[in-house]
Image (cartoon, rainbow, N blue to C red; front, side):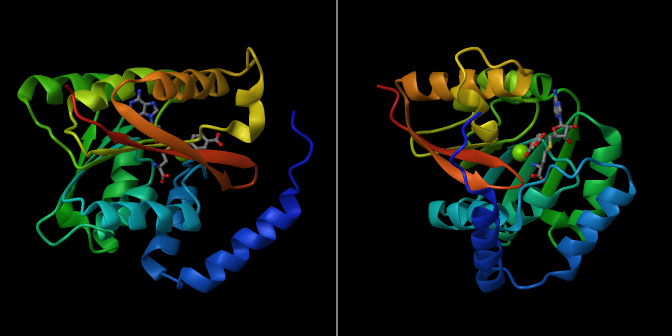
Amino acid sequence: MPDTFDDKLAKRVDDYIERLFIPHDDALVQGLKDAEQAGLPAINVSANEGKLLYLIARIAGARRVLEIGTLGGYSTAWLARALPANGKLVTLELDQKHADVARKNLDRAGVGDRVEIRVGRAADSLRAMVNRGEGPFDLIFIDADKESYVEYLNQSIQLARPGTVILADNLIRNGRVLETHPSDNSARGAKAYNEAMAAHPRLDSLILPIVRENLDGLSISIVTSDT
Ligand code: SAH
Ligand code: DHB
Ligand code: MG
């Protein structure tokens, strides 16, 4: 376990940034409350990370976004708000209860018309999308079960074009990815993703450290040409 991360200072700095740049938003705050009330785990992105997702989508000029792992739709709402009026976001979720909570939250956030939630195992949904030729997406955000991240990466590339941005959450796991053989499955999955991403001939990438209760990380990759 790394011991030099001053988590109290990091949290204060994260709060400072949030106060400066994230105005209070009733729909998003109520959405998190309803998700908690419905028993969903509080593992959504932070407000600052949501704003980062929104800004990256805006900078990329994204019109078609794919998300893997919806939960209560909090990150979904941030990404959907970055879309133009005719934009479209498809989000994949295993759990019907999560999808139901997310549907209400996204409607309340005013982006329901731009978002389609597909329920099922993400690997199955992705395979069907590849077979139907549903790509390319402009931006893909991977945030479901960490054990499957490498599979999601390979499927995502099949739904991408040169220039597509691929983001993935939770890649540092409070430093557990530094262990040679991480003992927990999520850190093992994240570490495998990091290595596959770094070695991939068609990805140009970096991981940004992200402050949450613990230190975590978000990767940014751009898909390069296939020749
Ligand atoms: N992106 C959300 C958080 C997602 S949490 C946010 O930041 O607001 C991870 C989600 O992935 C959970 O809702 C979980 O049910 C879902 N999930 C887990 N395994 C999955 C799978 N195999 N296929 C699709 N979704 C899965
Ligand atoms: C956790 C955090 C996440 O952002 C996520 O997508 C899944 C799990 C966690 O801290 O356990
Ligand atoms: Mg996450």
